[in-house]
Picture 1 (cartoon, rainbow, N blue to C red):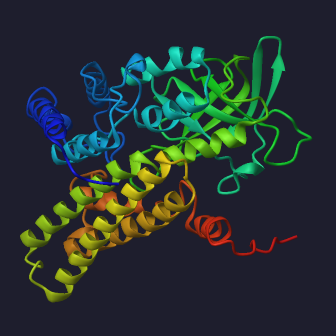
Picture 2 (picture 1 turned 45 degrees about the vertical axis):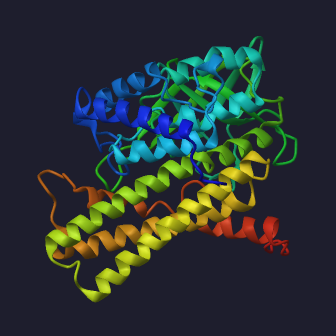
Picture 3 (picture 1 turned 135 degrees about the vertical axis):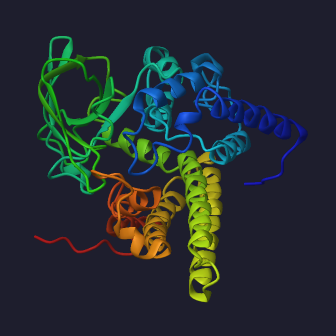
Length: 394
């Protein structure tokens, strides 16, 4: 990916920077920097208003066609916006699942009717989404899922359980992987359904985390329904669509994530100076090493975007996920070492944590969610390097 900016790109950057700074210095100053890892519950209503303000000004879903609420933005324009968003201290996005996962999936695999129905409302911030993938017995081994859906007239009837469902308690819609052919092989007979959350037959139970919040949920489906035409891709062909969604998750979103990591590094350096440990030779070396790795993540994300543009999504995206998960864990550990003894003291009662403490606790999960490190190594070994598959335990 060539990062050479033209005069038009400079004008785009100036436009984005002016809008973001004006809003985050003004009406939305209260949400600046909030809603990141471990802080997802902070100021939700205010951040929802921010989402709608972004949509109203045309700053969501940049790469989407204009007819669906996007800007037809180039990769370089997306890079520019993510950079300016991070610099301005933009809050965690409540519409991220819609914009980053299901939206691109519907664009690529959906019908014209599905695009017209869902995409504009994602872009405007009027509908939020959650992801119905993992189950108690189907996490990294997603093909082991047992949630089922059966046709009943013009509806799919869904029974089963999903777990680790981010933001389910706020979402209006969920994209659900369900088994629609019980006798087909594991990776077949799965369909990708779009399911309304506000209906009888759906129960949501929050999962308490060590951060003291409940970003994740268990979702139980007991006779929940969705229309028969709300299948993305072919019936029983949902595995291909699901893998496409995971590729989108590790594409342009990773660049925005990297810029968030860079902001966290800046915060660590500021705290290190405040605590008087920035001159310690070992601490300086550790901070420098993290800086180098955050830059490596940036260029890996760029390569991943270029690979996605040419239709190659396995090599760079899997390597990138494995790399940033370990990096972020190390960042959380370093943040605690920078704080020293103060890392053990909450900022306020009953359980008010600092940014660094929330980051440390949240990063414990980075090497697990979205495909565990062990699974990523298997994928890289088998699909990228061509190594023999791992022996199966009988």
